Every structure is written in C-alpha cells, then in structure tokens.
Length: 171
Length: 190
Image (cartoon, rainbow over all chains, first blue to last red):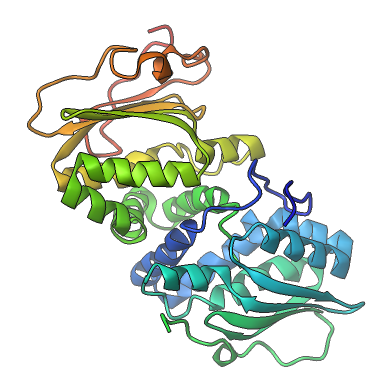
C-alpha cells in the first residue's frame, strides 16, 4: 500500500486509507433509497453518482484509456481497507479480479443485513463513469468476489445481464 | 465500486441528490432513518443503553479511526467534544467539494434524534471551517453551555485562533435535538 494517496484519485485525503465503518453508511444509504424510491430510484442514484460525482474520473479515462482505468482502480483499491483485488490491463480491456470485496467483508464482520442488490451498484456506477470515456462494463459474480471487465463500447459483447450479478447476503 | 476512502465526498453529494429528489424532508428522513437508525445503530445501542459511558466508547473509537484532531471532556453532568480538525469537513474543504448548502447539518441530523431517544439535549456550535463543539446533558438538566475554557481548558475550540471568521457565520444550537432548531445568527464579532 502506498503511503501517499495516488494522484489517480480525483479526491484525496490526508490518510492513506478510508475508515471501513463508512461501508455501513453506504449499505444503509442503498437501503433507504430502495425503501423510499424503489429499485428504479436506486439505479438512478447510482447512475447519477457515476455521471456527476465521478465526472473527473470519466474525464481521465477519456484521455488515459485503459491505462487511465487501470491506474484509477489500482489506486482506488489501495485506499480501501481489506481489499484483495488484481487489476489486469491489456490494450483493449481492463479486468478487475476482486478476490475480497472490502465492503461485503466488512458488512459481514459487523453482522449487518446487506441490501441484496448491493453488488449491482458496481455495474451502474461504473457504467455511468465509463460510457462518456467510450467504455462499457460487465460484472460477473458478486457477494464478496467478482470479475469486472472494462471494454471499449464497440466491443462485441452481450449487454449486462443483472442475473449475472450475485445477490448479496451475510453468508 | 463506491469506496470508503472518499466517502465524505459522495455522502455530501447524496444530500443534494436527496434534496432534488424529495426536498428537505427527504434529507432529514435520510439522516434519521438511514444514518441514525441504520448505519449508526452501533452508536445508538451504546448510547441508549450506557448514556455518557456509551458516548465515550463510541466517539473515542470513531474519531480515533477517522484520525480527527479532537478533545473529549466528561463528568457526571455533561459530555463535551471539541473538534479542532473535522476529518469529514476537512476532506470537503481540501477537495473543494460543495454540493449541499450546509454539510455540517448532517451531524445534528443524525446525532440529535439519537440523543432525543436517549433522553439527552445538545448545545452545539459549528463554524463551517472544520471546528465545532458539543455539550450533551440529560434533558432534565437545567444547566446551560459552559463558558469558553471552563470545561475543556486550553483544548476548548472557542479559544482557538480563527474560531471566529467574518466570512463564515456560525450555526448555534441550544438544548436541541433537531437540525433545523438553529438559534438566530450571531453577529460575526460575538
């Protein structure tokens, strides 16, 4: 883990890693939106977050391509406590091999009820970040470990099937 | 993935998203239902069952984890926090993130209802620059807020150079548990 947060991250803190208890708030936020605004509202929240809050990341991906995407995710997971993620970059694709999702792992340690569609946020947020940069995302797996592929939008690949994203649970 | 490293950034962004979706009431409801009763249920359990001892257990742990510059003073009548370098507001200032009109309201938004349920009231002041103080007393107490330095000595944030800045008006609460129960604005020099 780097001592200094990477410049690949658009928003930087003075400490090298975040506080894992914030995963409790992320999960609770999803639950609140789901209860109040339904699944459509939650998906809209994720997409808006990707488009707006993470717009600086999209801009870097637009200019940096797969190199920029890979740099971002390496720095991102360095700053997430408890993550075990391999970032594999090729000319046309970046693949995240998530062996230990830090959020799911912490929610389980804290025995918190996990929103069952929790892992879908990785698709909706990342897709909204990637699209303006000319990339698309496919997520396979979830509930603690998954594979996320960032591909050019002209790649011949079926659309994301949400049934390929595993429902999250305490076990 | 949404991460915890920049949590305060997307948390603050989310307040503005809620306000656009459902107005001020939806933001308030989020602080109570989403944060106070769900995310922070561990704080609620500690403080409702142990009172002041629960506050010390919760804030000692949490603020250490967030690497905050803060001081805690407590006796059998009052629990006081002096926040000198709020890590949360500091992150927003450092990164120039301002989507919601008053980020600092979220603390009273989730702590206030928890204290009400636990039978406490709150005197509180924040300067929107990452400094604030809290005095929490049982609701039956008739004591008002302490004078500067009286409880916290030299760690009282009100004695800090720069506590008063003309460009940043303070928000002040007296015996409050609601984020909207702010006292009328103080003149900058007071």
